[in-house]
Length: 265
View (cartoon, rainbow, N blue to C red):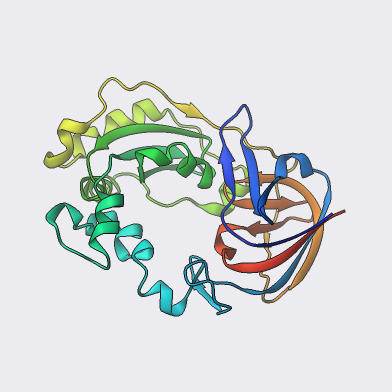
């Protein structure tokens, strides 16, 4: 079967194994059902997810112009500590920024390759953890806005990593760690403004299993601009990556805005 689509990050559902869905032709393709099937991905062009025009994608599914004007990709997205909506200060669109920033946010510890600290909107739990390929995660602070989450993350990343080693995550080379114990180690470093929001009694560690039959041994990254047509047997899905039998990995999220034809053989 053949599907035409503009790539967007895969939708996920936390079940015994994560269920993955790719948005195609006004429908969803359940990728879990395609394990061990031959899949061909053919690159056909670009479509900016913001303006919808056929412009080369610059970053995060946006063309160059949209990346620098869209409120959805302001600097505060990647650096929550730069959020200013709680002060009534606009970055690009104050109404949008209030809608996103002035909502409950979670600071968490996740185990993907190593223990890392991160930030997400409460409504994005556990989606954010799944997108990062985490196998375990725990909420440590729940704050009322993005700014407080950001300054908490900045303080804590002096003592714990804030990045995933994605190659190790994909190879399933994950360190063992007790996230409750790790939380206790770093709670003293939470900024004064956020201390009252520490989740003292939260002992819930979320465990996440991925639909993977075979992990890559030596990673080869698929770049659609260099390899506009690729076919391989799908062996797993983890984070936002498709994992193939020949050790090729394809980051769907990094290719948002790319128009492709997907052929399932």
